Image 1 (cartoon, rainbow, N blue to C red):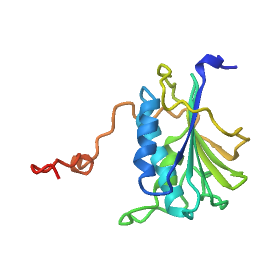
Image 2 (tube, rainbow, N blue to C red; image 1 turned 60 degrees about the vertical axis):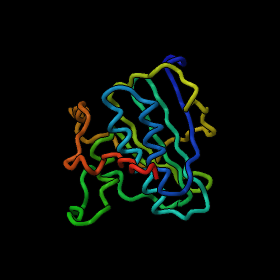
Image 3 (cartoon, rainbow, N blue to C red; image 1 turned 90 degrees about the vertical axis):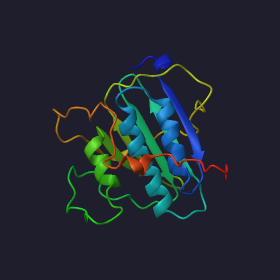
Image 4 (cartoon, helix red, strand yellow; image 1 turned 45 degrees about the vertical axis):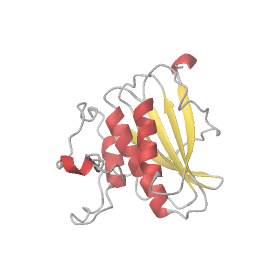
Length: 192
């Protein structure tokens, strides 16, 4: 049983809009430290983007993060009860279209998470992933420390990593092949 002082959980309600993705990334980036931060940030962005893109906009997206000494778990709740696709298979049934702009989110989650799955909720579904790499729990901060507003139920269709000898994902920060994609826009000289 983990030491209760070593457990940190929090919840945020995100807008049902594309702005939810960078907000969720920033929240996870601030909450985590260590080599699993980049992976958690990437996979969180994928889950939130899927929730925004594939559900109706009448309900917000909910983000839950649980940090333990042994792992972190991120869960995203949305209003669509339909399962998110195949989270149980370690490899896709067919390769994604190399020219398609989307269609790789669940593939990334299956490839990088130690476990992942989904479960029904009262008003939709929760899709989650777990990173088994040790999580360094940062000192308690004012935000994001809102306690979870739900009692997590047992996940459905969990997928433990198919390779028990799996090593944690890359521990160095990832570099984008084209750094210009992630460059911050330069302010114009007029300040506009």
